[in-house]
Image: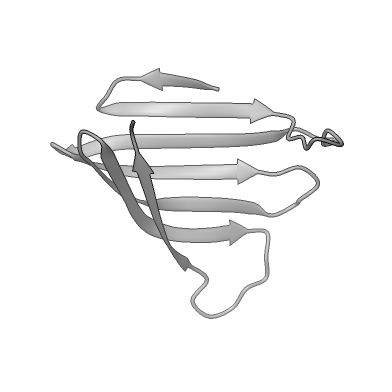
Length: 99
C-alpha cells in the first residue's frame, strides 16, 4: 500500500494476495483511492476495488468527516459490471476510530 500526496489531496494504491489460514487467492486484489479536502475537517473521497476472481468492480464515493480520533464516511456504493436497473447506488456509512 502506498499513499502519495498531502493532507489536502492524496491518491492511494493498494495491492496484494488475500489469504486465509488455509489458502492464498489465485489472483491479486487492487484498490485505487483518492481524496481531496473541501473544508477544515471534511474531504471528498472515492475507492475502486478489483477483487480476485470477480469481474465486477465495487466503487465507493462520498464525504469523509474527521476529528482527532474519529472519522465518519457517508456515501454510496456502485458496482461496475452489473446489469442493475433502477437506482443503482446503495447507501454506505463507515466509522473509524484512531487509538
